[in-house]
Length: 557
Ligand SMILES: O=P(O)(O)OC[C@H]1O[C@H](OP(=O)(O)OP(=O)(O)O)[C@H](O)[C@@H]1O
Ligand SMILES: NC(=O)CC[C@H](N)C(=O)O
Ligand code: SF4
Ligand SMILES: [Mg+2]
Image (cartoon, rainbow, N blue to C red; front, side, top):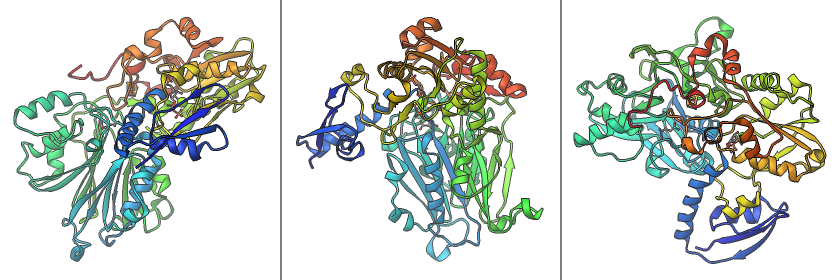
């Protein structure tokens, strides 16, 4: 197998990316017409190229992004009268597609495929896994989905927080226990996983992955309630031993279980597709026996598959959907805790079309921008408010509305540069080439601009953007950030750099940070503003990465 190495000549720099299949696509097609690829063909063995691709993928997004997204989960359970078909797999696929922003390392779907003679009976058949590294659209093909015959599905998109980025750690995990197969999909991070792992290993447990999530399966298998065939009982027992963040779905041949940790760090939604008229129009609840239930991380996934949003799964709630009875039962098996929803879901992680923790993500971001304009105005005014696309757009619109400064898309984002792009070399970084973001010179030249972004993590993006806008002729650049300075890592399901890498930890003085970035001024949304926005609910949120007050510390830290 041979691949192509590309040499790219841009107005600013000349560089030779490392070999990979992505490089080939990049050189040949994706940026055709924009850059000027002088493509050099160099023969390389396919295996080596593949390894390089893996390495590049792993490290590329680290360079590009600040806080990484987390994971997304989905569960689908059809009603008893529905014969096995490709519908559960397709519903899971589209829901995962809507949740792709939450994880791009790998994706998986587990299908409950009943024995063909027994397609409508409740507790027979197998759980079958389809998973791979890469994006949802790369892992699943139409042929794979079309060939499936299932009555329920469980799906996951991963961004790792524990364990390496390899195929073994891609979820859902499916295992065979004494009472049958079980599959699990987890968003979050367990703060005592390492301690539990050591304990389990001392008892002879063999781990198949390096993910924290696997601990739950072993705890279930070795549950003191082990004699119980009931997955709910064993899951409750296992979760009683873990701490930290989990919004998870479990699938057996018979039941779909959804559960959220008592602090409710991560979101989890319940939705349905009803074959009868929805409750809202008839006044009576939809017939459970005619309902396909969907569990998912964010409401955007329900919208994607045309499902009705029923409600959030509550912090500490465990919901069991049983196919045979058509029942949905709710339990609160854990001691109650103060809710600690992750405010970063609203600042950056979740999709703007979602409602998360009972609030519209878009409206939150817009309001953060308005509050930022009030708290950190640009004293002498400016010509434009310019967002850092995509995640800074809603906050910039809010800033513009509150300040009266016109909004302009002065930075264009390339949609061909994914989050799994080739790692730029140090040479490229030094040349300040922005692969993802480009200034609109005709708009920016000679103008005073307020640049609004949702967050600064390492400061890489801000520094590059300021440099790029100066090169494009901006006369003043005022950077406004729609969240407080980030000074700590996250232990609850977000892949964060070490504290020492965080700009606001390294350079706590915002004047000095502004100098490092190269802007004319720098302003953040304060924690007080954030709390005032959340009003009565401000005590229900986690702000650990902003104030160092973590609801629960990792046991092994
Ligand atoms: O300070 P840094 O370490 O550079 O990280 C901060 C940047 O990372 C995020 O964007 P990202 O490019 O990850 O994704 P987006 O396109 O979804 O905004 C965030 O919106 C900031 O722009
Ligand atoms: N980001 C997440 O929610 C990750 C889930 C799990 N902790 C993993 O590392 O795979
Ligand atoms: S530490 Fe930050 S990112 Fe992590 S849960 Fe708390 S607010 Fe969210
Ligand atoms: Mg961004």
